[in-house]
Image (tube, rainbow, N blue to C red; front, top):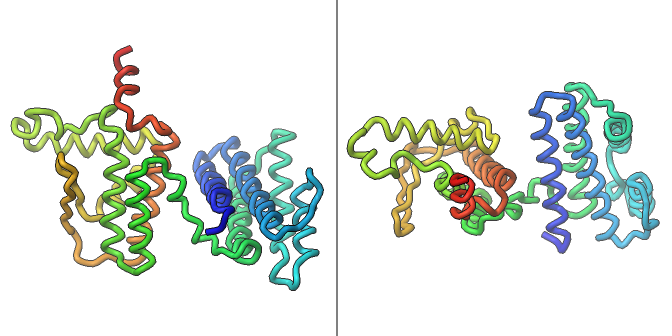
Length: 288
């Protein structure tokens, strides 16, 4: 990507968070969703102004910047698209921010969709990159997990669906492993595996759902992910073992698996920041 890569990632993070807030199902979530999506829209417009070297007042509004972009455009393709829809989105943001009036669920969904459609149309036209090419992987804080996800993304681009799912499964496992000190796996407890053969796998499955709930991940999506990806485990020395449980993987499944692994890693980031891999912090809290 360009020198504006961190800001472009932030655009996608804002849009992704807007969609997540819709899932709250309450007025506050609806208001936050339209506000965050408007922030994503405005940031992309600001990036376009900077990268194109367009002069605007220091405190220019997004409308003034959009007008300046369209005025400087050589043709229709270089102008800011969907202006009427952006006006509707901004009106909803202003109503929420300044009047405390939240849009209905249906209106919030419609406006967030408008914002996303703008980003998908405007990113290639205004900053020269397809919106889907802006990867959230750069926002993952854990270095090992980020590297695995980048490998998975590379396999997707090469249409190696099964390989992408292996890396996604490993990335998920590494993300989830950072929480072992807080919530240890039953199978890792000395004697549990030998004395209670059927109990440890059952408790580990319950633990996995608890971990998902802890970081606000949909349990159905988590179980679907677990059902379609290969089984990946690590020895104490770090050696990886892969067991392919399904002979064929589709493009849709592979992309869905990688996306879920990215979202899970980001969810761990949101909940614990860079503290997840610091046993001393969890230990200190548990001893209080």
